[in-house]
Amino acid sequence: MDVILYGLITVVLSLTLFQAFRLRKHYRGTLYPALFANYLEYFWRYQFRQDLSFSSWLKQELGVHRLLYNSVVDQNGHVEQTYVTLLCTRGVFVIRDVRSEGQISGKQNDKHWIVRRQAQDETKNYRIANPAAGLHQYSRYQSQALGGVTCKEILAFPDPADLTQAKSDVCLLHYNEVVRWIKQQPESFSEPQILTAFEKVSKK
Image (cartoon, rainbow, N blue to C red; front, side, top):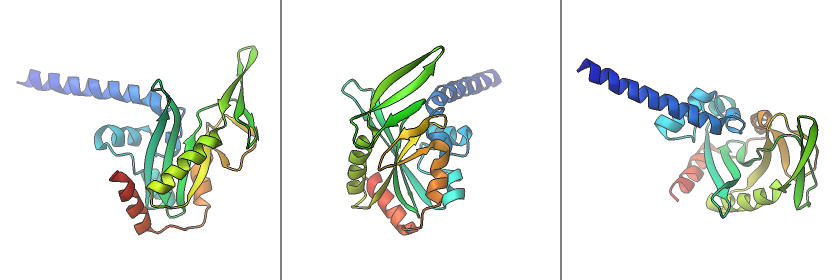
């Protein structure tokens, strides 16, 4: 009996460790480390609670809050755009997680922005669609889903990204600046409004 029990425990632990290793690849290099206290909390809430709408780190920094997630996929099923919506007493913030490192250059009305990245001894350039365009569209959708609430827009980039050549009417921030910037905004949303808006979206 003990052998069977130990075997089951070993299997469960092995599966948990495998899942933790697999999930970490989807955690690193994204906005998520800026929203959660650490990977352990993220993994616990994802794997066991199955609820990433709450963060102990955001509770400490912003108080009552809720998080919503969404992705836009292309016709081949590949994720093109990733969004996090944060509801807190400072308002509703729609954040696009732009996972592009290097030097980002582009203007507000440009159809494409350029990402310049150093690769060994050569510099490589590639184009990305102006991330603000997709953000505007998704922000309108999210505003309607939340009952007409005004959403504040943020483009969030990895910390090593150089944003000095990027110009936009949308707030451009590094991952590690997002929570600090939101914390500086004036309060405009009550706790009941946060919970009501979140419940409204959760039922859809």
